[in-house]
Length: 199
Picture 1: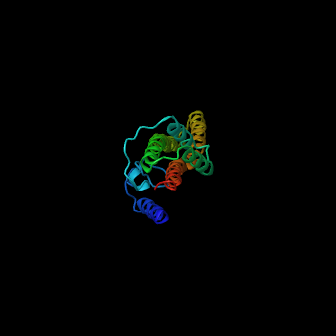
Picture 2 (picture 1 turned 90 degrees about the horizontal axis):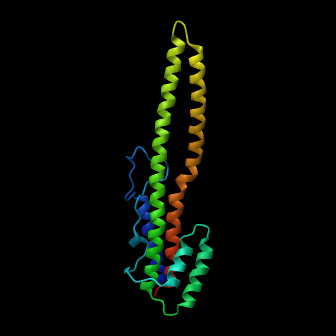
Picture 3 (picture 1 turned 30 degrees about the vertical axis):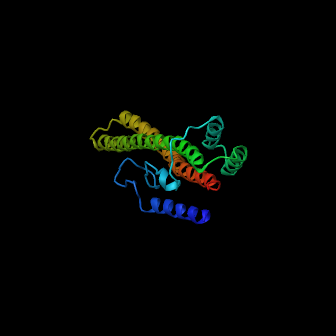
């Protein structure tokens, strides 16, 4: 029964992404090929009611470890197994509270990254416009009856520099765009690891 429930949750998450729920393709500042999904749904990833259960020191210590990206999901599974072994009376409600706290912390980081990508993209858009204007200015100088070659040289140097910055940013953006998706997968993976111990 648990396995069936987890499969249903996975299907919902996949459907959530594929239907583009909360995704906005009309945002001209979004430069990634990945869909822009600003807000994730805790209820899709955790199929049990979640209450505001107070978390103790052991619960919070687990959350602190789970949200660290350097902690692999395999290691996270071991940490959760150890936590459950040390808390034999742990309830599904408490596991849900642990997941809720981890979800909120990772999702907050994810939203900040998405906002940063938007700001980064606006800089690229402005730089692309500047590159285009520099090219037009160079062309105007070259079409003059007496071209100002010193001005052309300065513009060419600026153009080369701006193009280099643009290319470097574009390469960095490829990695940055993957980060929200990786964090989404991590949140889902943590939920699945905790659900193994839910009754």
